[in-house]
Each structure stands twice: as C-alpha cells, then as structure tokens.
Amino acid sequence: MAPVMETRPTRIALWVCVVVLVYLRRLGVECCSISPPTVVCSGGGRGCDIFNNQGLWEDRTPCRAAASVFPTTEAELVAAVAQAVKKKKKVNVVSGLAHSHTRLVCVGEGGFIISTRDYASTPLVNPTAKTITVEAGVIIRDLLNVAAKAGLAFPTSTSWDGVSAAGSVSTGAHGSGLVGKGSAINEYVVAMRLVIPAPASEGYAKVIELTEKDEDLKAARFALGTLGAISKITFALQPMFKRSVSLSLEDDAGLEDRLERFLRGYAFSNVYWYVGHGKAFMGKIDRAPVNRPGNGVNNAYQPTTVFNVEKSASNYEAIQATEDSKKLCNTTGTSMNNRVSRGGGFLNDGTRFTGYPVVGFNHLMVASGSCEDYHQKHDNQSSCTASQIIDKNQSICAWDRRARGRLTFDLEIRVPLSRAREAILDLKKIRALNPESLCALEGSGIVMRTIKKSEGAYLGPAEDVVTFEIVYHRSRLAYVPTWDMDVYQEIEQMLIEKHGGSLHWGKSGGHLFQGLAQKSTVNLQQFLTVKKRFDPDGLFSNEWTDGLLGIGGHKVEVLKNGCALEKLCKCREDIHCAPQAGYLCRPGRVWKNARVCRKGN
Ligand SMILES: Cc1cc2nc3c(=O)[nH]c(=O)nc-3n(C[C@H](O)[C@H](O)[C@H](O)COP(=O)(O)OP(=O)(O)OC[C@H]3O[C@@H](n4cnc5c(N)ncnc54)[C@H](O)[C@@H]3O)c2cc1C
Image 1 (cartoon, rainbow, N blue to C red):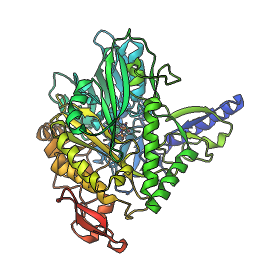
Image 2 (spheres, rainbow, N blue to C red; image 1 turned 180 degrees about the vertical axis):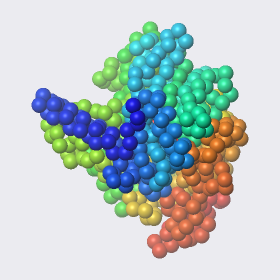
Image 3 (cartoon, rainbow, N blue to C red; image 1 turned 90 degrees about the vertical axis):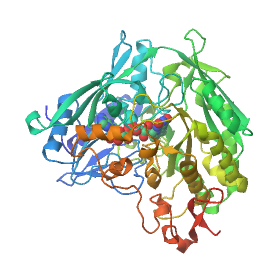
Image 4 (cartoon, protein in one colour; image 1 turned 60 degrees about the vertical axis):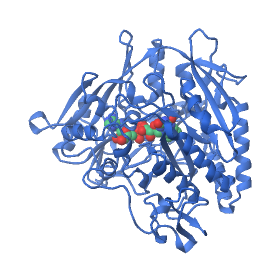
C-alpha cells in the first residue's frame, strides 16, 4: 500500500474519534481525551504545520513541511524516504506526540515529514536472547509493559512514559543511574533497522540492519534523526527486578560534598534541589529482588484538567507581574513539604501512599504517564476533539498545548560529576545574593540525575555527568523580559562555560548549544563520517542540526535586537536585551564572564 499523503490521515483520525465518541456517548459512560495531533496539514497544497507538545518551538518560528506521510509498514516507510530522496527534498521523522523543544524535525516549506503515529505495532520479545524489538513509534510504556509480561525488565526510562522509542534514543533521553549500561535509553540498543537514502539504481532508499558487530551502530544509537528513518529497534532486557524508593527532605548544607557519593550509592538515585529553600529532596532508589514484598506504582504524572492548568498558569503570571517573591517562595515551599509526606507520586499498593520504602516491579516504578490517552467519566462529548478544547473539565496532560498553560524554558545542563562540587558551591554563591530569586526554579526543584559515560554512542556523554535541570517562566509574548531572568542566564552560562556543562538535545538551550557537540561527546568526528556515508546530501539534516553539529559553518546563535530575551544569543550589547524596558546587557554577579539581561545594575 502506498503511503497516505497530506490531509487524509488527520481527517481519518478525527472521523474515527468522532465515531468512537458517539458510540461511547450512547453507552453513556466515557469520553476520550486524546493528545492533539503533531502534524496538521491543510488541503490545496498549503502544506503542513508540525507542533511539539508546548505548541511552540524554542525560537518561536513555525515548523513547516510541504507534505506528511503516516506509514504503517516498513515498505511504506521506505517508499516515503525514497520519494523525498528522488525529489532531493529534505525529510525527517517525528513521533506521534513530539515532545522535543528544539527544531530537530523541521524540514522547511519544501520538505517531507514522516510521522510514526501509526508505526507502533505490538513489540516482540525474544525470551531466550532477552531482547525486545519495537517499531519506531512505540511508546516507552508499551515497551515496558510487553517486556514485563514476559517476565523481563527494561531498566531505564524517561520519567514520563509517553515518548517514543525512536524519539528517545535519537535525543539521548535517559533516567538516572550509573550502574551497568547506565540510564541512557540508547545504550540498551543492540540492533536497529534504519532506512537511509540510496542511489536511483537501488530505488532511492534502502533498509540497513545494524547489530552490535557493526561499529556504525554507535552512530545510529543516538543520531538526532540525522542519519535516516529508524524503522525498528531491538533493546537488551534484563530479568525482572523490583525498585525500592525512599525519599527524604534534607538540609542542603554540605550537598556539594555528599552528592557524588549519594548518586553512586544507589542504582537509580536522584536529587531534586530546592535551592531557594536550602533543601534537597533525596531519592534513594535501588534495585530489590522480585520476592521483596510490595506492589508499589509510580503515579507522578497524573492527568489534570484544562481548568487546573489554566488556573495554575494565571496564578503564576500574577506573581510574575507583581514580582511577589514571598508569595512564590511560600507556594513552592508548601509543594516541597507536601511532596515527601505524600510519597512523591509513589503509591505502596497502587492506590495509597502509606510510607517508605515503596517497593514495586520495575516497569511500574521507573516511569509514569497515561495522560496522553486518558479515558475518564464525562458527559460532554463535544469536549473530546483532538484539536480543540471546549470543556474546562476535560482531562489532559499538564503540558497540552490546547490549554493556556505556562510557557517555560526547560534546560537540562549536564555537568561532569567530577565538577559538580564546584558547580554547587558557585550556585550557592549566587543564592547568597538573593535566595528568593531562586524559588522560581522550584517547580520541581533543580533535577539532578546521572548519565553514565557512553560506551555505545558517538554522541553520548564523554564522562559520567549529573544533570542540573532548570525550568523557569517564559513570556507568552516574544521579546518581553521576565523577572530575575539575569539570575537564570548567569546560572546557565556558568554551568556550561565554567563547569564544562552540556545540554539535553531535546530540551531548551538556544544559543547555549553552540559548540557543545565538539566539547562534550564521545567522538563527533566518527559520527560525522558515518553521517556523510549514510546521508551524503544531508537530506535528514536542517540548519538547526547542522548548527548543533558544526556542519558547513552553520551556527545556532542568532544576533539581533532582543535576541538574549529569547535565548537566541548571549548579549554583547544592550540592544540584545530590552533597553526600552530598562533591561541592559551586564556581566554576571558571580560568574563575571556571563553576559545577562538585567534591570538596573
Ligand atoms: C513530560 C516530559 C517528560 C520528559 N522526561 C524526560 C526524561 O525523564 N528524560 C529525558 O531524557 N527526556 C525527557 N523528556 C524529553 C524527551 O525525552 C525528549 O524530548 C524525546 O526526544 C522526546 O521523544 P519523542 O518521541 O517525543 O520524539 P520527537 O520529539 O518526535 O523527536 C525527537 C528526535 O527524534 C527523532 N526521531 C523520532 N522518530 C524517529 C525515527 N523513526 N527515525 C529517526 N529519527 C527519529 C526526531 O527526528 C528528533 O530528532 C521529557 C519530555 C516531556 C514532555
């Protein structure tokens, strides 16, 4: 069957949804709340828009394609790539839900976008080899569950389980841990089927199969979508085990001296640092044998409602507008204290939190989700469309772009573990100047998880690293400065420039990505050599990925008026900030090489 082009899939999906809804309505019970579509095409050759989960790409420009393809079989995937290669068009693959923030998948007005929304049939377990083979669009939840049914465990995951197998390996997504192969999902890839461009004599596209015997697998395991279209991935599994979780809230005095020992002391430990309050939420997360009693589950990512998302955003925006740091710190302090006493999202028996440790099977503890496809009792069928929200009580993921939620920058800065001590001490120096300014980083706290030095991927980290993930407010309107932005800009620049930090490739970072591939990866040159061989015309690349990888002189920094407000540049002059609003380009207060947009001095 030929790939379906342009608008048909979206229309079919909407019709199927309507039919299902009418049926459910007749039953009088349920109403489906599904995530909005990633690829939306208009008829009449007007092309397609590609959306990520925030509905906003990091640089705020639209992400476009001329046409979309929704393959369901490998033959259709090959045909889609061949079609693009034959026409010498840019081409890329996006998952069904698209949760990366940067423009990795943007092919431009003339390009083809391939969606793996419908490329996700049931994973296949090989119990003898202890492996699982999945199609590219399979989400991590399905991988975890199918492996578990066979008595096997996939030991790591993103914290939210709705990301796709191919999307997560392509950006080096991870959990936390330094034991064995570590926490990066791509390190568990033992084989891959990849569709790459081919000469006309071979039909313009071909499938290659890479196994651990092929050095090229080190490029394919983590490739930012730039080598070709991943068709299938085989991951290594382990015998089932349980996780034991104990969380405690501790004073952060001496955190710099304790952190590395703590993170190395448990198989999957993590820390959420409430830096404004001087507290650290320490997660002792370890392996436990399957016969250890406990039926715990991780329930952290609960579906929420449109009403809740919008209320929380407007509350936050009101605090921003009044710059009421006391109120902000009170709010984050309350949620911090509730977090430990309520189990941090872990439930001992699947329904209640009764105390630590929470022990449960790996697949139920390693990640959580389900908001992306949630069924709840509701009687208003008109609320259930994939593109529009009519009913404020509709259940959604907290980050659903259809709700008027908070916009944020989300930077995961990875500092070599060996340099974390100095980084923490410097952050404490910044805090000493104005502790309340850091309450804005306490939505979850600074998320500190570990990723092991990569053995299996050229683009993987060259050392063991710990993340400093900071999430903070972003203005709904472009080129509008935000409260205390100088503090967060200084922290980012300091962690990257002074402490050797790098960034998560699928999260925010803007100009800070400049040159990081050269500095922080295992072997960029080897990766580029394979890339040149697999995709000599760079059809799977765009200006953003070329900028990230330093190809053809492309850069990710853009200098123009107001650029530092949008993270497009590090300011050099006042016009890169907002002089009309009093925000001028100033050196950092602790890291003097930082250049930040600050109001006043
Ligand atoms: C709520 C939430 C929680 C998160 N938690 C974590 C976490 O715990 N840890 C973490 O590391 N990250 C986390 N992330 C970030 C997320 O893991 C990454 O952004 C991931 O890349 C998203 O995967 P996706 O399936 O949405 O892929 P997309 O965003 O669709 O694509 C990402 C990349 O994969 C490529 N790609 C996708 N499919 C294919 C294919 N078939 N062939 C070739 N290339 C392909 C794309 O071209 C692109 O380069 C989280 C994000 C959200 C929204």
